[in-house]
Amino acid sequence: MAELVADRRLRVVIAEDNYLVREGTRRLLEDSGEVEVLAAVGTADELLDAVERLRPDVALTDIRMPPGHHMEGIDAAHAIRRDPLPALIHARGARTRTGAAGRARPRPRWSLRIAGPRA
Image (cartoon, rainbow, N blue to C red; front, side, top):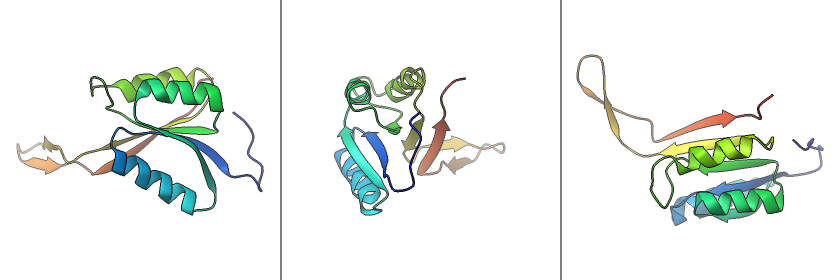
């Protein structure tokens, strides 16, 4: 991974199929003044292409993305980790899961996993 210099902004590629979430995340990160968003894309294939072309410091990806809305973001993150480039994986949604007592518990709206480069 490229070593960050104190006066250099973190270079990020965002992958999120939901336009509002993608552009909201872009704006939030760019408004911090500490992050340069190199690309904001809507599919895992576009993510892999952007990472290869732009060489960001980090990639932020959703888990479920087109075309299948299954694990495309996870698969892309695994491919990116071979690079070695840290991949941040976020999942959003309001699905519920069943607790030990059989009662539905809401899952967190957002979660974040940091997948660092493999040694």
